[in-house]
Image (cartoon, rainbow, N blue to C red; front, side, top):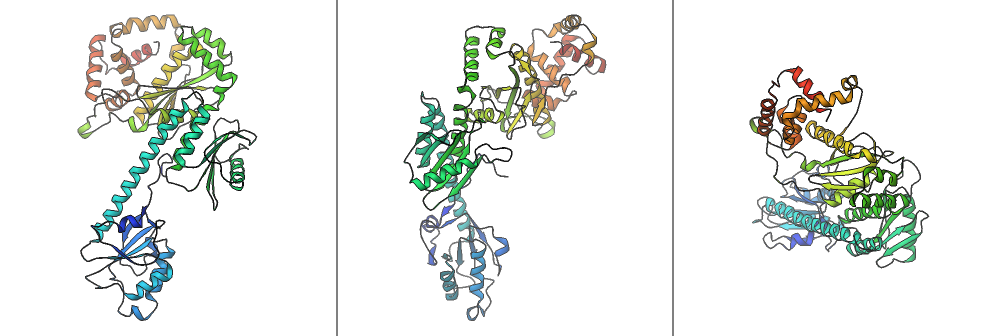
Length: 508
């Protein structure tokens, strides 16, 4: 399935292809105008190309398939009608070496069925035409991506203004060249921006917004509708409170859905529970922490029932900084990992049901209420802690970090921390911790060695998977583990030693 966050490639106007002087194409039949576009180029000498077309192609042929008696029958009429039925956008007929001119009956058939017919001169290979189509497609794709990127940045900047909701709507209306409106839970217009459409279009958009209004399982999150006057789209905001975004535009560009989706994510955050009393309490708790308050004080602000998951998330396109390469080696990680894109992090938080996000290094930390169990998210690798109250969140963050390391190493979309009774429950906690401090004392001043040993043991001594989890070279892992063995004065190949060390590391 295509990635819904990436705008599809815009088609190429047929006029742009005809304007290429290096091709010297000439239209000799069929309609013309700016609305005619092609999505690809395909060469075929089949008498019936219908089964091999997807729609939108410029079909190129040299007429090899044309029989000598074609001009006196219905051959060309049947041939062109099949191309039109398959959704072909245009037909390119190459001159020489088979035909010196385009058959007159083919010209007539293209005019009859409304199929643009291009004459391809002898000096223009079909491969040159196909290459030109792909070049124009690439240029259109780049232009659209730039438009979407600029819109994302503008929307994010608008969301940071003192009046964020009206600012986001204004920016969305400008970027899409239409009208943007925020509907409340009762379907009323709370705010809008841009040139308002005519009353019938406005009424149709209001009805479309009702389609995405929460009404139970199976309710769509977005809906579209086209009228003679405008293209309409509605998006449910993921707050669960019934808000919706409506957009009315004169037309529909490939990147419009992506731009509107970004605006919907931002409006979800702006209309979510951070605007309620609960959100105010969380803001107060954050301020209290920044001013030096204790976890116990913060817990009182959040309430006795405030229980959380801590989620550590890593974008999939960055997670394989170190992976097995040729001859069992691993690629080194970049020295300075870049943080995930803020908009992507915001969208992740919205998908998990929480606005409490924090991009740190190459991961995103998310604080998720315990009643919203985190699930795998496309494009992300997640490590999830056990539930914890506010005063125990630092320990939960450690659990999430270790779960993420294991998820990265095992190529698993989501790994949860699952505490269960074990050997540690048979030993008094104070004695277990004292034993761990004594055993691991040689590593106390080397946190990198301790974490490497912990990861290496958790992955059953796999050099490559440990390198992936820590984002370092496998030789670095070998050196660190060897250093651990030397400092501890023990043999790490011994399973009893490994078990004892694993027990001790679990007490930290």
